[in-house]
Length: 375
Image (tube, rainbow, N blue to C red; front, side, top):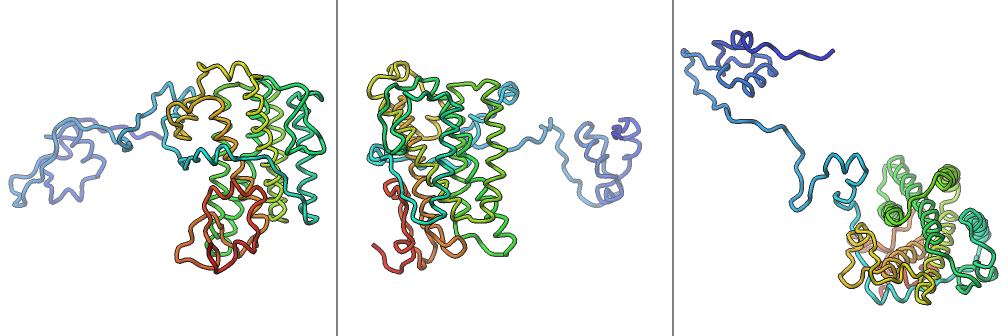
């Protein structure tokens, strides 16, 4: 039941003669209401010897959450339309990539070495088949099936719409594994009363990064009802399958994600090739404007805000996820720390620079990571 505010005249009678020293007996809500609406309603007794406490009599502003300097608050219409996200601070600001890293990403494939690797690779190939089918890729648009992650030539290029459909579907799936793995490792850390080995941050940051890719491409293409249903079904199956699989064998799951990211690097590299050959006229137009969310997230400099630059940044992110997950697949899932994070106080695991996850497509071997020697 909602409480009714007290009548002002009764409030004055109630508070008349009540000193500040005896305000302990006055209900706090009544004193607060009287002070805000009628400051003179609360007075001190003439017989009180205690000094009066100054009560502000000016207009009182409602309590509002503090905002950071330089950030604009979102309007009601922006919140209603879902555009307030653009004004919020980034949870994980992107560190950026140097130009030599952006240009030196190459599609590659790590050959399966164990039975678990083979299982992960075959699952990825099955997923690739269904993605090609769902996104409408025709046989003449496909590359050599014997080298699916390295061959780039095809008889017919894809259109801008086909590429965006492919990007959105790929990113909606790629954002799942990091969240599942990070969440399960978080629960494991709580359950075992032990700190994590630095994996949680990288995994959650990976899922956030993939979501930023998705939000960027959604500014350029709005999926229809059919694609929304497909993504809904694929996410429901994939999330639960990933959850159960990570409980059974996190090593195979990281290898699976490494192979999945190989497909992503291949996809974006082929798109860059078709851009360079003038097959995508609209994106090659100098007046084509990429979404502002991309400029803000990657902090893209002036003069480097074309569609090609955007694909270069996204591809470098995918290459980093490829190297990180292949590395995680090589490590002990419980005892080995994350080699791409600085370890305070040193230890038996060396910290490697982040860009090495891009330039080492097959990941770092455990023998390279777990060593007291430094390079």
